[in-house]
Image (cartoon, rainbow over all chains, first blue to last red; front, side):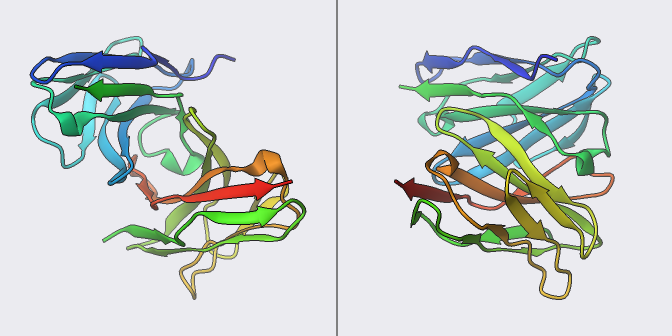
Amino acid sequence: KAGVTQTPRYLIKTRGQQVTLSCSPISGHRSVSWYQQTPGQGLQFLFEYFSETQRNKGNFPGRFSGRQFSNSRSEMNVSTLELGDSALYLCASSLGTGRANYGYTFGSGTRLTVV
Amino acid sequence: GNSVTQMEGPVTLSEEAFLTINCTYTATGYPSLFWYVQYPGEGLQLLLKATKADDKGSNKGFEATYRKETTSFHLEKGSVQVSDSAVYFCALTQYNFNKFYFGSGTKLNVKP
């Protein structure tokens, strides 16, 4: 079966712009989570969506937002980009919320570079 | 609170050497523990997991035992291969949470 698909794989944006990243979970998975990975901070939780509702949110400014559609696909948006937003953004899906002990399946990520 | 501490890397080994990557955790309640692996340019892949104390997770020759008394989940492999070169992440989550707490990652380099 198809894995978690993230698009685009690479993105270069200018400071002040906004960006939208997309994630399609494994078929049948209804929970989608987003993580930011940087060399300095490691893997940090952004947010989790289940059934189009945000269930959990990490400690990121309001410039970071997301949503989930009825087909479980998710998007995250970052507005007013800053240099420090340069990172690998990983999306992960699981069967359902509260099922994290089954393990996530991660996508390959979107590498965002802000210049 | 919840947190994971991993040994600093990089770890450099010769092929067929024994591998140990240390992981300790702090958690409330009864967490589930995981090891994920990240190959260059890729996302994270689940390597193994354990959901209760004394459970042993294993996969592809890797093993880790959930030790509640020492709050540890050390990763071991008896004989590493060059293809095992990657970054390894220890992680925990609590039942009914959908948020993972990751360690900082340990880079493993295996030389032929």
